[in-house]
Image (cartoon, rainbow, N blue to C red):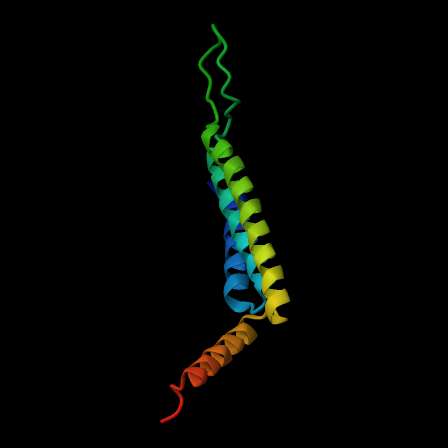
Length: 132
């Protein structure tokens, strides 16, 4: 087997690395969710490509037919479920980002951390912990 014949694995690796880099390197929560989506797509593509058998046909049994090679339908069926779960996770994540944006006025991770630290310091001062 040559490397050109395994092009779909290279696509999987590229999508996976782009998705992981986007999740790690970006500060914006929407971009992090889109990176998670790219990662999910790469996993789905990987499983679907594993289910394909060279020279295989759809697993429909015909009585009296000669012995044939069948493709495995299970990865395709499982990935249909994964697609639905991925869409649901994306929808919930984006809905949370909309709520965070509305409550705090930003969707940047560093700014949210600063707001959280300021809130904790203000709560400590209100309890009298900051006075010595």
